[in-house]
Image (cartoon, rainbow, N blue to C red; front, side, top):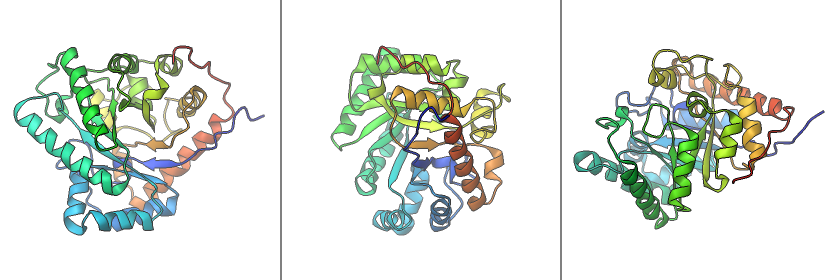
Length: 307
């Protein structure tokens, strides 16, 4: 007997799911594939949204212009666009100068592409930080200021806690959102980061202020970390249902806690990068839908009392 119906199954292919042979912090991060080829692949598979990383977006815009890109997205049935990744927004000097350039570019692109949410990162050496050095107070003040700036453009920012960053767990990230209390600052809640941060899905939904959940992302992984946390996250993620993280239960937890938005799917892996783009995005899509089917039959999670 089906326990719940999960009606909203609109899926967004995050940056790395549909970029082919590209990876975070590798080269300039841009996709080697033509944008039309990529859009044809995601449309054929059934995706409703896509994500762009700054460098890839700027290369496309330089080639065809932002208005032409918007037209291509519309022509291929793309209804949701997310942009990323603003890093070092708390920093000084050259790091902050580069961060502000990315911010300006993404905010401007968002106005044309209809984007509402920009993903932002915590302090992470792979994105230029010189170590986990920012104080908690400065980090929170800077995030509050970033969100307030985003609000001027009718945007919001979603921070992603990562176990190898200065915000390691979803519980810590949730507490930060409560302290900031800015309606334009929220969270990315990602299966891999939640699980690798040591949180159970029950503790996750108990901790979350759901009004600050802006982005939810699905993926899977092996039971144990393969290599370093960084290697595991950028090379070894698995498609939903192929690993040990129980993606279906993650979906159940988020749905029962009240999530009704679209679902990002973030598969960053050598295996996916090696596949032809049409085959890869179709396989990810189909396995994600299978996880939704499985989630409908999982016994209910207790919903949080502190949200």
